[in-house]
Every structure is written in structure tokens, then in C-alpha cells.
Image 1 (cartoon, one colour):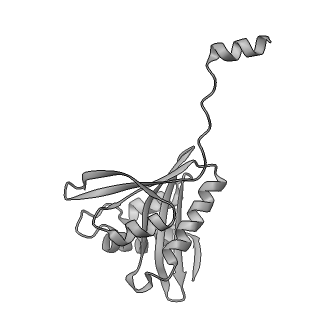
Image 2 (cartoon, one colour; image 1 turned 135 degrees about the vertical axis):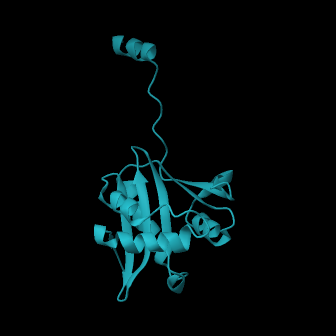
Length: 166
């Protein structure tokens, strides 16, 4: 299995996997055109995991200055529990560390106990339960992984001026 950055040619496959593996039972929001836009954005990393038969998993993470949001992550059922998701997430965690990100955030269906255990095993902690998050049909669990301590707030201006006079 190999990991690589997704190209626009991967958008259809990613969209179908999102529909079938993540958005099942909900409205289909991550269609191919939206996935293509994510792939070309500079503040977003879209990766795919491939074996000799094709794409077996994908992940999408959006980056801000100090925070990142794991938007989507899925692995085909035939390849689950084989370390595919772990490898993709470790790639993204390392990318976030290199980018100086403080924390990574994500939401998952409250009913997805396997995903909850998976993220906990990789250092994520539950921060909030959001009732009706998914189209008012299902609650979400929000999780966070702290990668580094946030920078301390700068001193107040008056303290700084006094310090510079000394």
C-alpha cells in the first residue's frame, strides 16, 4: 500500500467513498466537484491510500494558522483494521506538526464507536457532544488532539513599554 497526495483525477472515487462510507444515510455533501475544489486548495491536504487494485482509503485535512480540521477520513471495509487509517492520520499529524499547528479537531458520528476508539488511541480527546449535528438526525462527538502548547499571550502594552525603558 502507498500513500500519496490526491490529484483531481481522484475526486470521483473520493466522492463515492465519502457518500458510501461517511455520509451514508445523510445528504451527499462531498460530491466530486466539491472534492476537486478541496484537492486544489493550498490550505487543504487530501491524501489517498492505494494498493495495486486502486484507492482503499482517503483523508482530507484543512489547515488554519494554528489549527487543523480533519474533515473526512474513510477506508474501504475490505481494508479496515489493517493500519490504513492509522498511516494516513500519522501522515497528516506529521504534516500538521511541521506546519506548526497547535491542535487538530474533528467530528464523528456519536454512534461510530470504532472510530471513537481509533481516535482515542491516537491521542484525541473528546471535547463536546453536538446534538443533531448531522442534519438534525444524529449527534456528533467533537474531538481534539493537542500537538504543541499554544504560544503564550504577549505581555500587555504598558508592561512592554516599561520593560523597554529599563
